[in-house]
Structure formats: C-alpha cells, structure tokens
Image 1 (tube, one colour):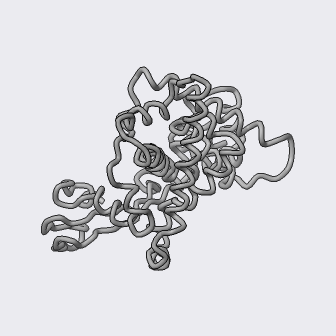
Image 2 (cartoon, one colour; image 1 turned 60 degrees about the horizontal axis):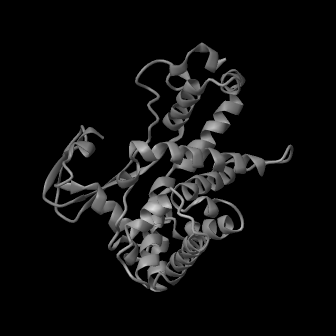
Length: 294
C-alpha cells in the first residue's frame, strides 16, 4: 500500500484510472465540459446554509420511519444518502416526493459502482449504447429544469448550490444549458455517494450492537458519534483502488519489485481494517474507551 500510494499522480494516475473504469458504464458526455466541482462550492459562507439543508433532509427521512416495523438498514441509508446529496446540489424541491423517487431511480441507474464491482456486465451496457443511462441523465435534466423554471416563475432565486451551479451556465443557451447543469449535479452527486450510505449503515448497526455506545449517542455526545462513525468505517470499509500507469514505474510489494509499463492499470483492495497493528484493534470502539466496548 505504501508503494501504491507513493506513486506520483503524473506517473500513475488515480483520476484517469477511475475515469476509464466509469466510462465503461456512464455516458461520455457526462465527463465533457463540466463547469462545477466540489471545491468550487464549499466556501466558508456557503457551508452554513448547506448544513441547514442537510438537517432538513434528515428530518424528512426520519419522519418517514413511523413508530414500528422492520427496517432494511442499507436500503434506508442509501435513500438517506440520495436525499442528502439532492438537498445539497439539486434544491430542496428535489429532496422530497414525488421528485425524490424519480431522481433516486435515475441516479441508481447512473451509479458507477457496477463498473468497479461487476466489470464483466459492462459489455452489455456498451453494446446497448448506454441508452438506459443516457435516458436517465436526460430525465434528471428535465426535473432540474422544472425546479429552476418554477423558481423563475415565482420570482424566486434560492441561495443554494443549485443556483450556484446554474449561474455557471448562465452564458449558455438551450439546449446546452439545462443538460450542462444536470451533468454538473449528477457528477457531484455520484462522487459524493461513493460509500457514504454503507458507512452510515454500518454506524447504525454497530451502535445497535453496543448499547453503551448507543446510550452516549442518544445522550447527545456528538464527538463520540463522530468517533463511532470512524470506527465503523475502519472495521467495514472496502474499496477498490486503481492507478493507471502513464510512464514505466516500479512497484515494490515488500516481497518483489514489479516493472509496470504504460497503460497497465494497478489495482488493489483498500480495506481500512487495521485490526492487527495493536492489541484490541480487532474489536469495535477500541479507540473510544471502555464505555463503548461494554
């Protein structure tokens, strides 16, 4: 892992490797001409309003739960992840039914995870000309266009990320403008989802398995909750990491050194399961004290 991460991006690119893999499923136009990236949005002044939208989205999601019944944790946290993302860059109007249901279905169609975990199935996607994915992207553009049009008719310009994204396309005419806005929103959303919903799901599961830890969270110990989430990520996170060789590089895995030629893709699983570096790390909440492990 040290050698893998030690390779400079200019010699073995993670960004290029990810892009090539995602292009097995996602439409090429989604990556062309993007005008908005995450670092463009998260300035100090914008974060306060952004956090308020997240709180409202969480409240709506909790209101859907009711008082009893069965909960499929990962399906619920996936829906929550979509809701949080849409509340962030697609406007509050997109984070509630009926638009929420339509957007979730289409964003799931565009989810690039299958390109990493089911690459053998991508030949069928390409053979079909990515028609289903392009149709999903077009439908998302229609929904976002409706949201912005409704705001204009009402004489309203919300101070949110959707307006900031739309402003970056102010000089573009239709039919370029709305698909451009949608492309920025979708790429931001897909990147933000990543493993977010799984991390939230494991956090809930581990807390339910450890009543003492859950009690601290219920009592309002937010710092402890942050640590609990990090601990769940440490124990459960799995990712595929890729680097596309741009020049000839050498990689030492601790046993032997490999000479890797350009256009070869290096791949490794990235588990964050640091369970053997010190006694007790195989147990949940080892780093958070005795109360959490009770």
